[in-house]
Amino acid sequence: MIKDPKILIIDDEHVIRIGCKQALQPAGFAVDFAENAIIGFAKLSESNYDLVLIDIMMPQIRGTSLIESIRKFDPTIIIIAITGYATPELMAEVIQKGAFDYLAKPFTPDELRQAVKKGLEKRATLVKNKTHAQAV
Image (cartoon, rainbow, N blue to C red; front, side, top):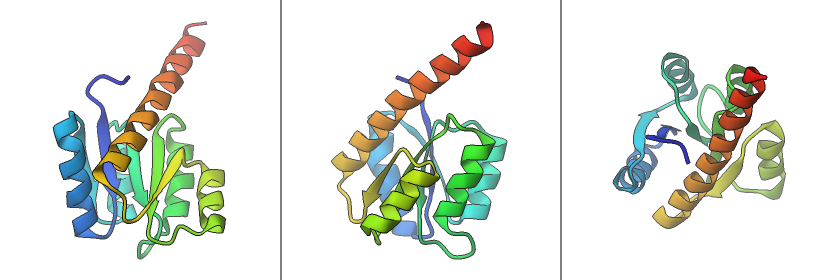
């Protein structure tokens, strides 16, 4: 597992941002948030995050476009899409664009923590493999 994991929540709904923070902070995660994709990507550029929760349906920039930008910026950041429009087609697109997983709104705090835990385990493996590859 990642030591002192940092999570960024990018969602235009204030209630979702606060609810995710309240579910994750007591579990030991450092949580930051952004109310749109532009602010979210700026925060990603300024700080190191291990995992990002991204709302797919946001104004200005759609979450799927943000997923692609994050993948180009740092392919080891774990992305979990969150959406109230979890159609099979949209979820297939989200995974194809590079999301690790997705959660359909509404989700429970336990579902969120479980998805984040699995994502951080994957991040630890990616970082370990990247470090090993650079050392060789």
